[in-house]
Amino acid sequence: MLISYIVLYLLISILIGWRASLNVKTTQDFVIAGRNLPLVVAASALFATWFGSETIMGASSEFVEHGLIGVIEDPFGAALCLFLVGFFFARPLYRLNILTFNDFFKIRFGKYAELISALFMVPSYFGWIAAQLVAMALILSLLVGLPFFAGIMICTTVVVLYTYIGGMWAVSITDFVQTILIIVGLLAISIELYWQVGGVPKIMESVPDGFFRFLPEEGFENYIHYFAAWITIGLGSIPQQDVFQRVMAAKNENTAVSASYLGGIMYLTIGFMPLFIGLCSKILYPELQNGNPQLTLPIIVMEYSSPILQVLFFGALLSAILSTTSGAMLAPATVIGENLIKPFLGQISDKKLLKLMQLSVVFVAICSAIMALLKANIYDLVAQSSALSLVSLFIPLAAGLYWRKASKEGAICSMTIGLMVWLFCEITASIIPSLIWGGLASLGGMVIGSWIWPNDNLELWKEMEKK
Image (cartoon, one colour):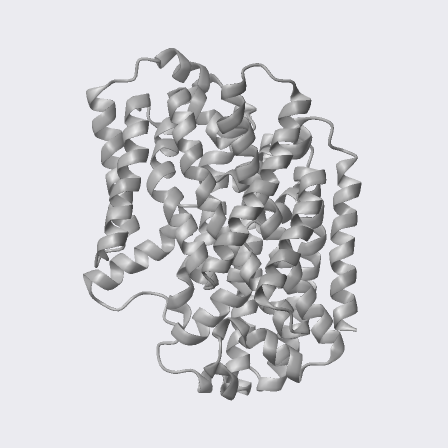
């Protein structure tokens, strides 16, 4: 029954992509769904941006092992990101009517900043996509004994098919359907385990002291790591194309802002379900905690749940993985087509640009699949992805929107210096998290670069302020 359901679900996802492809006539349709998404669909898409394997399998295992302090990065940092997007970034970016984040860098800082930002942004997605492919491969291995390589290939193929033909329309519609399945599935298994474990008093008796501690212990090093956990996704995922596409796909700017807030609320509340499920599972079945922690939840559901709960849980898990993977593949593909290839081809038709973006989806998928085969820790893959964009792109984006004196030279210095310092600290294993040093270097590069080479395009700034 379960295997048949999985096969049927994957086929339905491809069918949705085919149906969505009927709406794709232009690159705007493919990239931002023609800017026609209503609030509920846009919010579901934003919620589904990162609610994938890392939250259900990665964060739940971190929560069981380290307590509440171990999951600051996700779901707390991810929810923070969506709130900040709604408050500071959604409205001014929506008014520019552009296809990618990197188009903003071109408008604000010039073509070289556009090129550099695109080159830095695209690789940041490979780890994120690879994490989802790893999760799917682990699940298929558990359910049907498929080899790891075969599982990655199946997941990659399914997502590429419906993303290639349907673009953002397919991503948004499948995200909406998958969000419903995620909520129903996680809620059902949470209720079942709650009654099995014996309620809140039994849970509180079973956890060690300090398990629900939200603040770090005293000490500079503890606080700096705590801060780094908040900003890894909280700030690092703001300058990302997948978030931007979902914001820009809303039918108007008020919907874009409201969808960001609603998506953040959904992420924060629904994101607690996998943590609760993981904790109950540890209490009920402690003997299963010694294996691969990323597989603890799937194993427990397989061995101790009814067929109906198995269908609901794995439906939720597959939904989360596919929704995250599809959006993450589409985002860098649009950047490759719009900001890396198009500038070197001169004037090309919209039809040819659309085909370039579709082929780029395949390229991104291949690179991510290779990365998935090389590294199999879900939580680490996601963290590395967000850190890269934080140290190179966040400061130029924020300064470009809110600091009149930010110059193109300052932006280029910010991106390159921030990335180089981050890589150096990663190699030397700095005690202070390397993304902190990289972020500070990026800020310093922006300030010093803009001071040495002042902004000479104030007219553009004035036009942006009017918008």
